[in-house]
Length: 114
Image (cartoon, rainbow, N blue to C red; front, top):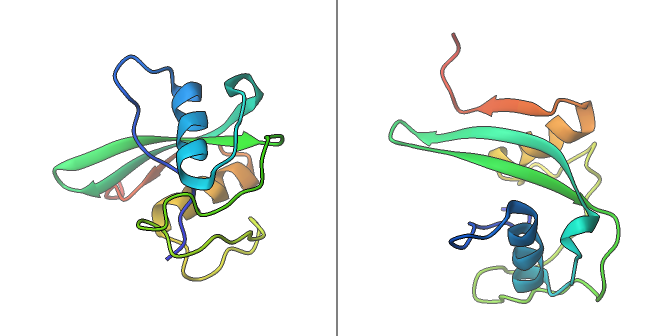
């Protein structure tokens, strides 16, 4: 299954800094938090008792070559066309990517229809 580099914030950590840290930890690249652009927010309901808010950032520049920096957690690294995601993309990150591509800045995912 395909997912984006992601994770949780450390206590007291600003969101862009956490995104840059997760990219460094998971794919070995250094991103200046000031170079990240917030492109979508997804309010994801994983199950009835668990929901989270995902912030999706675009990085157009970084230092280093992307690698699998946590081989115990990821089996590979792939580039994919965001307009034609592979069928094995996890639905939650796929929703964030589709929101960015379509220009929707906020979407709900996994919530019952009103």
